[in-house]
Length: 276
Image 1: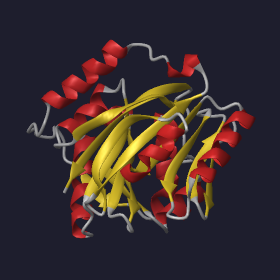
Image 2: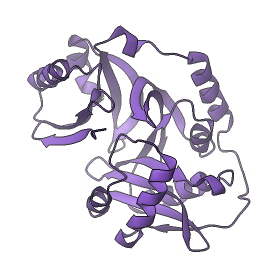
Image 3: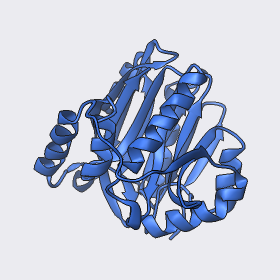
């Protein structure tokens, strides 16, 4: 299956392809205007994509609404601890917009909310540290074991190295010097926010709150760099991942319907955020 691609141009950074069958506008630049929205819409229609989702400043809301987009989620104080961010979506297929198992999604959200700032004691001891290019072979092996497919090329050593040397800080949890789990901070220095993402825990180490241990270390690093807002986009059916953020004090920001292809299926995703 072909991997979706990331495009950087003067008006914005976007991710698109047949894997998730969508366009995801990840960053809208100051130079962008309504013509850029229309350009991406033309790309979506030409490629037969069924969803266009945009992560944009709240002051751009009207422009997207005028083009038929609706708000699905929000993160307050996203830009430098001040300006709010919205996830605006437009569907080109009724089937793509229709969400199955809403009751289960709501159950996961309520369970995660009930865990707010819960205390726990890890059942085992793990060493948590920042990963380096030397760890990439173990990282790709772990990601391949955990995910049958993924929206970003985390199975590709070159991608991991390139992102590691630029804006992504990867963290690993080790047991007996073997990588048991990893995750990443996808940082945006100019906006002082970071996406806490790419969590993977090996089967033999599940149930030990290892994702929470990683998250706490990641938060500590972001605080030391004076970041202001942290967020994640978690699989909506995953009790474990959503509860990890709930128990670490994250707030629910909304659900992105039928948004991302992971492990062969397009899934709805929950947005969680934390102001630090």
